[in-house]
Amino acid sequence: MSTTPTTTSWDRAAPQYLAEWVPRFLPYHRDLIEELAVSEAQKVLVVSAGPGAEALVAARRVGPHGKVVATDSSPEMVRICGEEARRAGLEITTRVADFGDASGGPWDAIVCAFGLWQIDDARRPEVLAAWRASLAPHGKVGVVTWGPPDPDGPFERLAHVLQELEPAYAPSGRRKFAERELMAKMFEEAGLAMVRCTVIRHPNTFERAEDFVRSLREACTWRRIWEDLGDERINRIAAKFYEGVGGPEAPLSFAPAATLAIAALPGAQVEIAARPSVRAPNLG
Ligand SMILES: C[S@@+](CC[C@H](N)C(=O)[O-])C[C@H]1O[C@@H](n2cnc3c(N)ncnc32)[C@H](O)[C@@H]1O
Image (cartoon, rainbow, N blue to C red; front, side):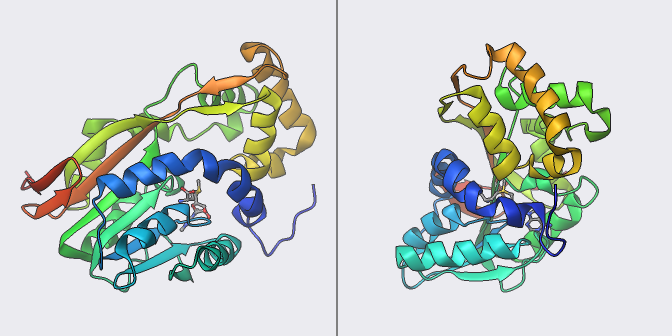
């Protein structure tokens, strides 16, 4: 398959990601911003914002006296995010930047939706430490990330087939890190104290299993794998996946688990939706 070398797989996935996945992910975004108790006049940084659905939710809450900055490493995602904000009549500053760039703080909230597992394991502590360094004293880091894994979920089933047929492309398996103790440890290693960790689910349906596979490979995380492997090898994976779900025409209905976690500076008094005032524990 031919690709334009100056763009990344996320750039190429961006328009379809907006159309096909954002409506499915929006309920998770809303939960995250709600749980973070983002409120009027606050300053919020949204990293790996993609087309910015969660940034739009945050911008509505902070209102005209607040500030939302949305960043992503994909220029096309950032362009679409700016367009979405303009279309919604919201003021959002957009910037092409790596997750680890938290400049412009201090932030009342730093938000990362479905970006955590995009960060290399070795880099994650350094990225989280950069977020910590840019937080306001009562600021919070809020993440929503896929996992813990549902062994029978379509994402996991497809990942399992990939591992079997294309071991060199073995999926990262990072969903297994979405567990309370491991999330707390991840924050702690960056000098942050976890104040909330909960698993959320929202219904997702695809009319046919083949729509799910097409959408994942064209518009989401499988785009890079598809571009590397090509149609034939991806079709082999898809065929094996269909055997396990009742065929390519079978409808898929599932509610993928995502872990929503919030962390703050150790000892800080912070507000979250679940509790209007909570003191972040001191570390170790
Ligand atoms: C699954 S999408 C999530 C987008 C958005 N937050 C949402 O929930 O709809 C993952 C995003 O991470 C971005 N990303 C990947 N590597 C990145 C990096 N090094 N720095 C910043 N963003 C990155 C991708 O461009 C993509 O927009």
